[in-house]
Image (cartoon, rainbow, N blue to C red):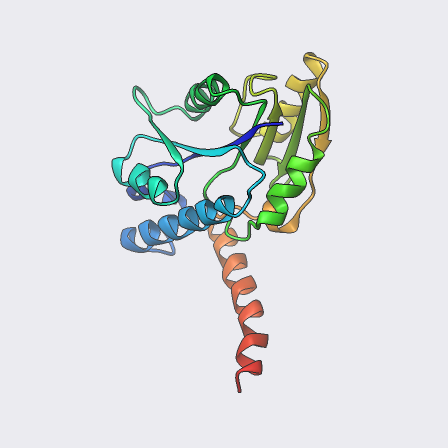
Length: 210
């Protein structure tokens, strides 16, 4: 099957506003760009994808996407995530996509193996695969086969809501449980956990270098 990845991205200066108690505006912008580039580099390594599409209203964000050979769509009108994702799905559907995997750009532990695992789970011609967040409330990754199998509904409680939408149309549902994919950095507690994981992973490397 031809599966496309879709990455929605806010302008860097508007990203990570809930980290304002810990980071300056410049630090938040730098962190958002770091995570965004990590997402694009990870997806570039997944050769099983038919393509990667980034949708954003920010020209700088789209320019970076093209550095990673991603396709781009400039978002217009009122900023609304679900509407933007439906538009992006229509674009790749016109390119012959059999399905899409929607990924936010704030999963700092995302690996190519995570993406491949979700693609492999897409066994049926009408199904969704969801990777939930740590609280099992939000949707951190969403595989849709076909791209319009449900109308996406991100926001509070989207993990349960996406499952309900799939049940209503008779689609198969599978859940991908991944500690790496479950960490999305939105809140101060998420950032502190990310820093701790980074420090823990760096410690053995530092010891080996002595």
